[in-house]
Amino acid sequence: MVSCLISRWYGIGSGGALGADQCALVALLAVATPTVLAQSRLCLAWVCAASLPASVQGSVVRFAALGGQVIPGWAAPGAPYRLVVQALQARSRLLVGHQHCRAAVAFFGPGRGRGTSYTVLQALSRHRPVFAVGGLPPYLPAGVRSVAGTLGGVAGVWFLPVGYRPDFGG
Image (cartoon, rainbow, N blue to C red; front, top):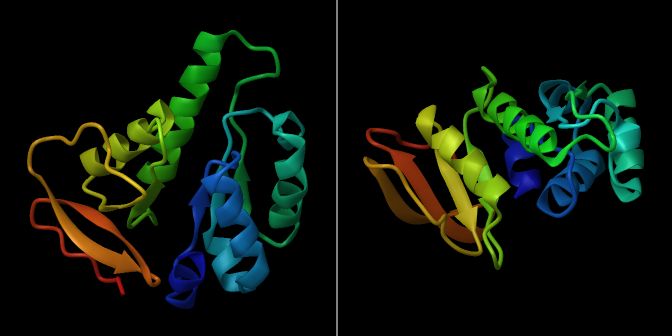
């Protein structure tokens, strides 16, 4: 999916976390051109890359060195849980609120994480389409319609605000 978006000159936004974020970042680093990297951004919840899991740190440093934008958060290591949650929510709002953000791609696995659900709701509230793979969000606001589709050959479901027509797919 990442290579499909890159081939259409879309930048990639990521929270720099484990799982889907890490997979997207690794795929981006493998195939992106300098132009796409310059359009891409990581919005971290933490004050620095050193606060991230060790398996992600190297990719974040390489991403920045190649011209990607890294936006640090404000949660410090050892911060109280409440502050970490607030920093993670701020990260989600930055990701989907960016002027170049045209869609959100979400992966729902077992358990449907609250963070992913929060990001989906933020995207939909900003009239951004969401492409979900592996399940459905636990809650959708009124006025959102779902349409089966694909993105880069991956089957999933588009969640579209009323009147929105995605300009990419397949």
